[in-house]
Length: 188
Image 1 (cartoon, rainbow, N blue to C red):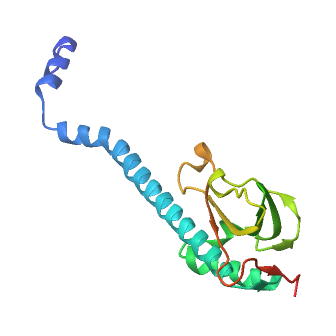
Image 2: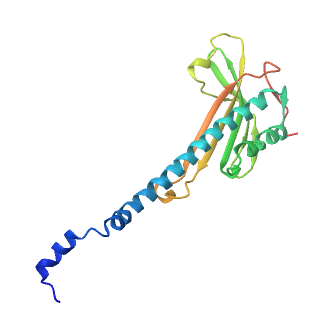
Image 3: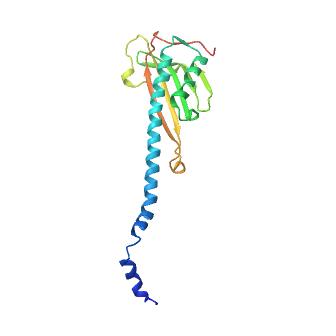
């Protein structure tokens, strides 16, 4: 039998046999988007936590030396790969420096940086450094801090074309433990 065209919509309106399938087809993309988004945010939070722990551990290890060399710093900073695991250490950049503060002036005494490419650079820049106001010393007696900074370049698995790489970083200041100042002995 041939139905009249004006009666066709009424037959669809009254038919509710495929409502669940249609609702599932409409909601599935949204639910997958939410699921993947929650997984990506969870991974970013976990990496952020690992970056914080890495910053603290690497800086704490350096504070336990009385003298350091570039090779010592390289060994300590390279140990960060074990802390950041299971995430790739190739996205990690670490800097540890000694800061000298005297009479409200802060100066970077030495610094060691392990780049994300695995290249270690050490220097004695003697450059000015801006400390947080809570750490600024007003006395004429020198105080030293070990400054550690870790940056991780997080690229989400999905959506990286839209939001790009997200830098996750943390920093900390600690006092040397064994001596007032940690001497830098050069590249050996």
